[in-house]
Image 1 (cartoon, rainbow, N blue to C red):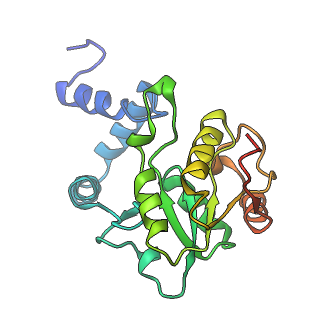
Image 2 (cartoon, one colour):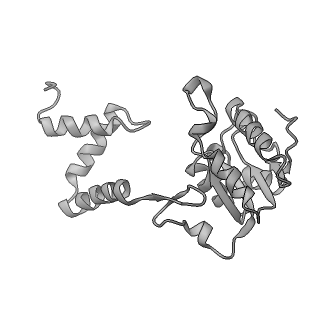
Length: 206
């Protein structure tokens, strides 16, 4: 045991918290000591929420967003525009777009972007399910709302080539989102305007 710690249990807890992204050992120590100061009921509720999340959370059968049921609340909402699908990289992007309150269509979460350097190929993403979804009909527009990075642009172009013959309108965010930016870090006003002022995706913007 590290002599810094007076308890193996404390050391173990700190080590586990330190595995979280953006959490160093000092922050992990503060979090663990904070939990130790709370009453047992509060800590049990915290632990139960995390364990239940891991064991019971689902991914929407339609859009692959995180959900409590087989079909997420967005896909099940009859007031949403089912003819428009916004393609995003991850769940955080769905949250960012929803926060703008400027979009009322559906989503399709890819689960990442094409990145050969990281070993992520098209087959590792939910691209085929998107093509199948569009092929079933009823979708008039697909918005490629991917980060304006090289990987995001490569993924958008790949999807464009897969869908260009389906007769569906393909559009992308207006360039209010700066090149190299990721959607989750774009402010709500800028992202909202980029959605409203979206433009056709021609495959020549890469």
